Length: 179
Image (cartoon, rainbow, N blue to C red; front, side, top):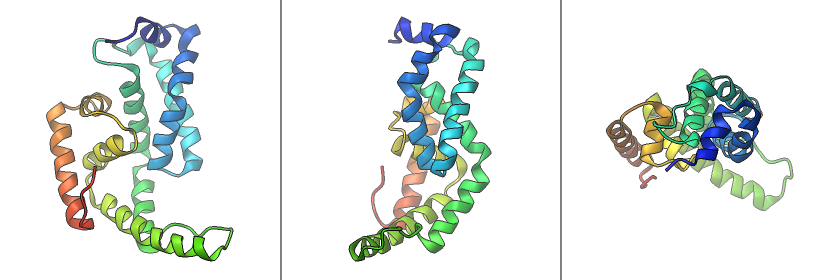
């Protein structure tokens, strides 16, 4: 059930701040996990600017505000897709950047994490765009299949099949069960 106050907050120019306050940090974290943290702030702000400008197009009958915002964010991430793929491929080759603190244990932990991040990044880079979007909306955004379908504008069955294919590819690539 969609709260009347949530719908009113989306469509009413003066009350839109409630939507921002309720969802900004979650959307920023999602974008930050998908792209560089430096980009996350800008794209999160752009997500809400687009939502504000398109608030008259929000259809409460189709779902809640949260998946709508994730859909906008995912579309913005799509614009940065080439950079995202280049980043995953670079991480697959080099691992995460080194820490500045230089402690021996942190270096050892970082090396271990680098191998894991490198393998995961490479595996994510090999997924199709649709598969990667579904996996990351579920894993990073914590969205349900229904919310992912709404966010991406695809059928529930499409989400399920993309996630199934992605899990198989990731399991084959990493040798472990995923999401």
